[in-house]
Image: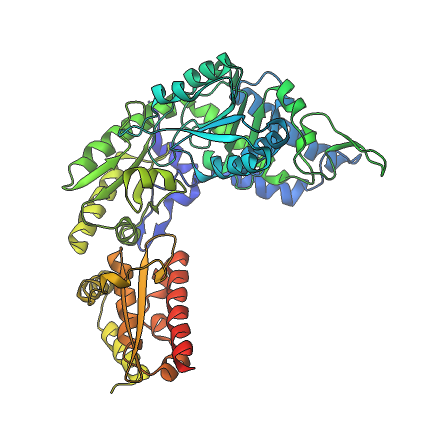
Length: 404
Length: 138
């Protein structure tokens, strides 16, 4: 049994009042709040440890480098990667996807196919459209079923010898659907295709082991797992990352530079040009430690109870429809109420101190599929409670009265 | 005819009577509901002000030396804000609209309650209305 009171105390922002009311933060799909340990570590780095990593001979630089690399090791353990050098630091999941999509521009040729799904975030669509534009490859899209799960039979009919890459999210940021990535990976590998999984919504919610999944590339963002903004992870199998063309050129990513010929550094530095977000990366370790200490399976279990309770309570509201009702689902609930625009609901909830997100959630194809302008989205995290769900439900009821 | 300045002053006075955000929001919702519906034929792509959150259509017609604005939005609160703008700027001369100093939103105590995206949407609405005024003035 998790001690949620104790957990909440580690997040200073949660005791804040918003609009004279206790903050109810239900926008975790956009970003999660940060632990005191993450905040302290980031602040302490600038106060006591600031120095550039990797090239310095002096004490502070060595200290910063050691701590920086400690995060890499912690992430390696967290995701079950075989080697630390398979963990690349990026600016976020978006950049991680762009590194792969950019690299594949020259690895693909005309007629090759990339498979995405209808429920992808724009950041897992647009980089591949750009990749196709340059390589001549084509996009194929796995359709969505009415319940917000993927049409796996549809996927099987799309996959062929032409398929070179499948890029799919682990959990839908809009519908909450947990996709059967393991099966998808297995089927993709049967035709020799590689698989990238966007784990932005998964990393702090469900357990993850990249070797068990057999996934070729996996990415996520620190800020959606209680860590700082501006830090992301790209995991890739060593042999694949070695073959992947470099992304940005600059310092750190080189072995030797001359005007005749420049050679690139080995992994992971090959993809880490320029000075990284050192403070954020060092602080990120505290977020990983926090999740590990609480236990990801405990988190998943607790969030499922929240999901069940919130779903049940929301459905008691007349005219409320939930989008995304797949059996295997994470604690993200998108809904609309008959005759009301999600934006109006969000605006009024804000006045009650309840932070939710409204709009298309960067997934316009999903909106098109369901023929809606947007949804109101509640996305829960470990520190949320049933009492907060009650406050949210009451606020929705009041909004409904005000707006009808 | 009431001037733009006078209408703004009256609105500010109206809003001073409200005791809390809920009354203000309810007033905006009512304004949104009461807004004369835009003619369906004017709900065109051209008249669409694209915001991140809700669509707004704005149409302008020039008759007898004055501009008549009509508008609609998917979201009722946005519609309320548009209705405020229409109350202030519609049925005025292009010159007066182009030169109007619009400080009522700040003074209604609404700006701090509107998100950045909403405030931006508001700015683009005002910009579009002023652009119509400049165009009709020439």
